[in-house]
Length: 117
Length: 114
Image 1 (tube, each protein chain N blue to C red):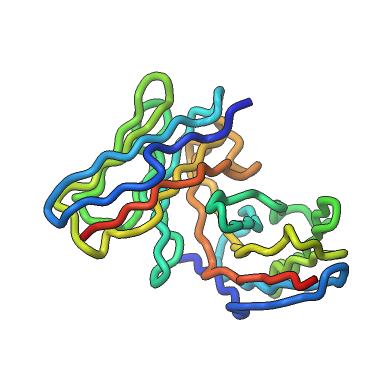
Image 2 (image 1 turned 45 degrees about the vertical axis):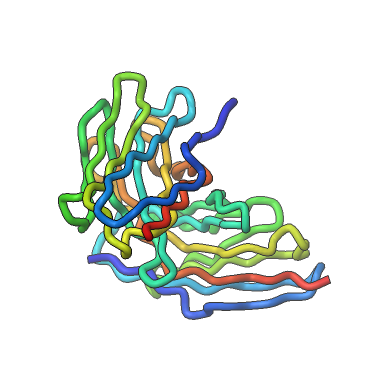
């Protein structure tokens, strides 16, 4: 069974600085997808960034980028130029597509990030 | 484009009762998944529906059930509620055949069982 581990329950960063959130996963699969989701106090889970395992290139979305190390089964999220609106809980998630093009997300326990002014 | 809509936002029920939660996916999305979020267990997959058929199911007791209608709207039902069922229930939808692009979540229904 696949598992996802986020070893940092809480982190804080000063506004405008850079922070990295860690995530490791365990799987025997070769084809899968990885995601980072953000959950602010409004409760809605928001997709931040995604990575396809067969792609070597690390994904980037504006201030958000990942460091995907497939052999090490590591998928960290870097937030540059942190903003107050980045304060939220961040979840790392793994998905192995099932037949029929459906899938289920397996989430880590989450990292609470506080951006300080 | 409207997002994933979940109703109601909050719900308080008594032990032993049953409850039905509703989820309307983004227009054009035909796959709907449900997740339970609790402080102790985190986010856990309940089930996924596509074309009115349950495609995947998580490790939850039979008291948890769901269905999907022809317009892709989905409902989740929990019977004989227990205190431990208190949680945030999240619904997510995706395009058919494109789960690799991730799922779009609703704001959830906060269920409190007293």
